[in-house]
View 1: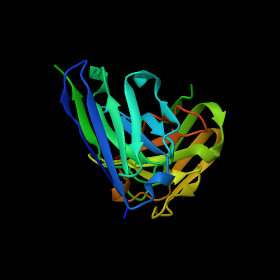
View 2: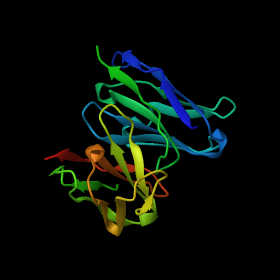
View 3: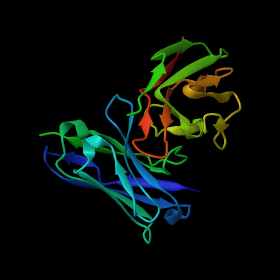
Length: 116
Length: 109
């Protein structure tokens, strides 16, 4: 059974940093692109970043470029999102998702709240 | 940058009725890269359709997708009570950004 479990969310002040993790199991982690998608409270889905199987390619939505870094550790079947210079508009539930698109599997999400 | 516009914003129907949801793109793209998701409150999205018309594993055949170019449609042939949710389309072409539509809320009339 495929499982993806996010952690690391919480309350952080504007300008602060946070690192999200996503622990995956039930599939051959190193063979797939992985993605972070976020959802602001009461809003729709927004693609944030994706990373290639071996970590050699990464892509970001324009609004997080230079502030967020997606990475992965295939030996630990883990995906990460390092977030810096956080803004109020980054407040959202962050989901890790399997694949580049057409995401078959998602985590349950972790809430990031940026507020003073 | 690609923009996906979903319509209507809210659709009010009764169980047993047919639902037709639209997703229109600002640029033409391959239907191979169009997906539909269902999301219920407090839950992660669930993949329904990929490649514009292929049902994901375990998705009932009352859900169907169609379209090409800039116009795509999700049809639910006969609504069940559990189908009332928010639906999103997504394009995931060969280059980013991967874009979601703003969603259509399907509510019980």
